[in-house]
Length: 449
Image 1: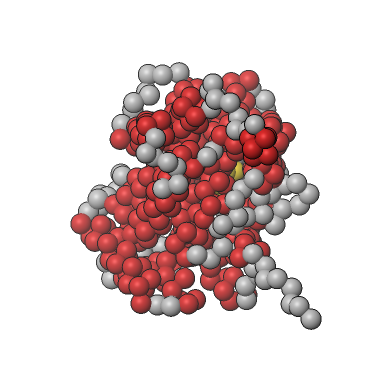
Image 2: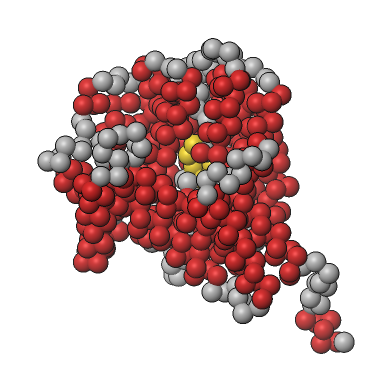
């Protein structure tokens, strides 16, 4: 009898210990990115310590639910790829603007009302938006993947310096040295360990860096005693949603930016796991983003989008199973319901995350460069497409205030290097390679002619 074919690595179900270890590694890579937006918004709103803990817990919970929607899916919702979803940073600036324009106690209801509309709109627009994948040949997707990595380097640099620019030791030699030692440990483990241990070199490096930080006084365990053990979120905890036109327009723009980034990330992830993302995959992924954003608005979370740093982790470890990422989604849900467990993850010092982040984000950049090798850069049009798109993508990193005097709509789109570079690459690819060109004749007809 012939044995059934082996499943694609994306659909492989690993043993439980490996699922847990790999899942924790994904949590370590994304945790800071999930908790930062609610921390920023909650502080701006003036929430108490208890309410801020609730807001962060809701962010973790809804990120976990969004990740499960992406990896496991149902009906035509979810990409069914190892696609990690978290809280979109693209919404932070517009939400801070809503906070400034709202009366006390009315900001979060206005934000959640706008997110309900924006999430539903993204869900309905997914089939139309997914058809854009034909505008992402290697010259575009390679540029975007490269920009994903480049745009994350400032995050790693901020972590390596200490994470908090207001802290007295931000950028200190000890912080940067700790990041460097963590990076060195990750590289050594990746070089000399094999098999399972080699594939969790990032997690082992984070653990080693955290232990090294203890005698330096940079591992803070005091938060463990200040958080509740269990907390169940209540729908619309901060008040019934309100619907303000300005807030709704802002969140619709945020979702458009997030859908653009998610499309680019899905294409990048498809290349890395060797299961190219077709229109249906992208449609399912964008539907999951929209559905998760609606759910987040109900449960006091924020807009859901792809986490590019986890794509770097997959590229580095070569572990492609979507069930690993589903496990990380389940862990996120537990962290949201049990804040004391989430606090355990948060004890990893920022410089330690920064050291590991350099390896993770650099791997994404290298994956983009590898994709560009198939982009026929010997053609001047393709070369200019990459050059100009990379320029627009790096502008927000090199000159953060470049668009400061532009309308808020332009700032929202162009201050995201990934979105700016993606839009420019798509437009230039159409200009150089599609406008005025006839579609290639089918081979049979060409032979007949």
